[in-house]
Image (cartoon, rainbow, N blue to C red; front, side, top):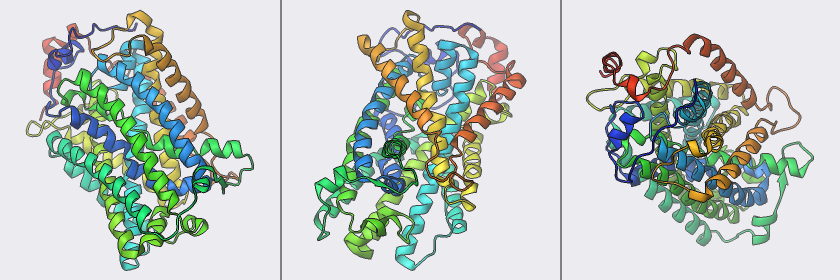
Length: 508
């Protein structure tokens, strides 16, 4: 099938529902989210209080403060290029399918198919990573307060409770999701300000600026400082994931052709600035580097808070972090479930007729929500048996979702003048920004397939590359089963009575 370019909407204030019909879909989701809410869901999914705090221990071992701070600054800049390039394509194709729909329209069915499976892997891996991280922090909080021992089994039980909570919250409809995400923005910003201010004022001792910005630490087993610094970028690159949530919620956002594009870019640059401040504040407050790395709480930032503020102060700020992580996980479930819904709507998943069903009461894809949290739960199960499994889950998120960001951008560059931009466009900067984005994604995709610890064995192997190969193989096999049923619609075909009737079956 040859790529099918779509005409761009004529004005910024065009009818989004009509635009969705032009793209081939009948509106079935509630368009109750505003521009701030759309920005808020991507900002909540990026969640600096989740990514930075959860992987801070990884950063202490893999390059130390110098790599964490300068890596954050550099990675954030390149991610901003990726976000701007993706935002431009999102403005032209504002659908819940987001990345795979863009790839399908600009490159053809197979491009859309593989982009969709990579995107889905990344989104489901993100739920597992975020909510398991929240469970780790909840265990650390219980350890400080009541001497709770956060064993892998107990942490897994906390994780499953959090997953259930997020499933239930998402069943109430996009209005509640939007409200929680709006609260999340201010909670994150106020939380960062509070944590940094308290750590700057209360502790008697602080590290020097030279330590914070130049100290290099290597506890990976690898001898090459360059290699260690490169894999240390995972902290920042993992955190800067999930901003495609704005695109996935397009069909539930007013003026989505502009609001979703702006939401992506704004979420990245606000997170970039706030995250740097948070990492610097934590690192200045380290009292004992080795004790922080090997903390009994299992969470190095908890040890920093404990050493600097005492048990009560540390517990209070840990609660701030845990609530932020819960906001983040809830937003990620919303984004992933919309991806499941959209992919099923186009016949790409086994049992698509079930996962595309939408509740008439809440206009929410209920079955897609449950599928998202169940698969995320399965992805985290290896954490019961391997101390390195959580790092593998975070790498799965990065290795799945990051290439999916670049594919629509690459296809947009390849399409040249065939691509008709939407109302949010980069203009003459489109090509240079796009190529920088594609090259960066290619670099980090290779980088995060590499082993992170030495010697490489069953315990220390980076399983992200295994997960990537498995998903691509399964996607290839399933292609030959489902290729006749899968396909994004055309306007003409979508208008037929048969298609309307088939979609109506999915409204329950």
